[in-house]
Structures are given as structure tokens and as C-alpha cells.
Length: 173
Image (cartoon, rainbow, N blue to C red; front, side):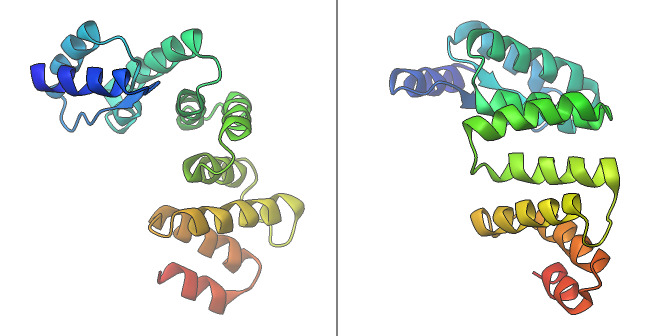
């Protein structure tokens, strides 16, 4: 805990507005609580979303960040994802739009926005929303060539447009 607090405080002194920490196991959340008490900089909690028991806690932490920094793109993205996994597409879209305004080249914002479009409307070949989804996903893989989920979703988009060869090639990346 002491080493983590010292490192986070070094980042804060160097000008970091927010710090991301890994919380790989449920037991590590106790340490995180103590770290939060000893640091002044907001700590990103999106790792909690991967542990069902902590989704509400993560959303609370993102809301706390947004109260002190309403334009924090990472927290806006986190809140969007929080609503997306609850199938609250309206609020998810609002937060993803706000995050994209602040950080237009964030591959996660673009991916989650495309995923939102897919969940709202499915894949409809060449319709406007599917073409927008395609554009977002193509930008994601350009920005982050290692983003496997983006390739997978993009392959489904291509398949819906009957671009089977391109879909297969994309899925294989």
C-alpha cells in the first residue's frame, strides 16, 4: 500500500489529473480503499466493471471524479460503459458523446459507441447507423491495432454488408 501511495503521489506531483490502478482480485479492493484515503488525485476504477460485485462502486467513483472534474474523458467513458452494461442506452450514448467531445481519438470511446449502436439496432447492412459503426470501428483498429474486440465487431459489420471476404480477413487479425 505504501509503495502504491508513494507512486500515485509522484504522478500527482508530476501533473497527473487522474491515475489508473489495477485491482486484479476482489481481495485487492481493501487495499484500494486505503490507497484512496491517502491520495489526493482521482483514481480510475473502471477495472471494477469486470467484477460484477463492484460495478456500482465503480460508477460511484466515476461520479465522484465528475463532480470535481466534469470534463474528465475517462470518467465520462466509464459512466457510459456503466449505463451500457445496464442496457440504459440513452444515458450510455449521452456519456459516450461527451467523452468523445473531450477525447475524440480514444479507441475505447469509439468502440463502446459502436457497440452501443449495435446493441440498439443490430447489424443492418448498409444503413446509416451501420456505416457509422463501421467508420468508428475502422478508426479504432487504426488507433489501436491490438484491440481484438474491435476487429471482431468490425467483422460482423462487414458480414452484414455481405463483404464476407473482408469480414473473414478482419476476423483473422
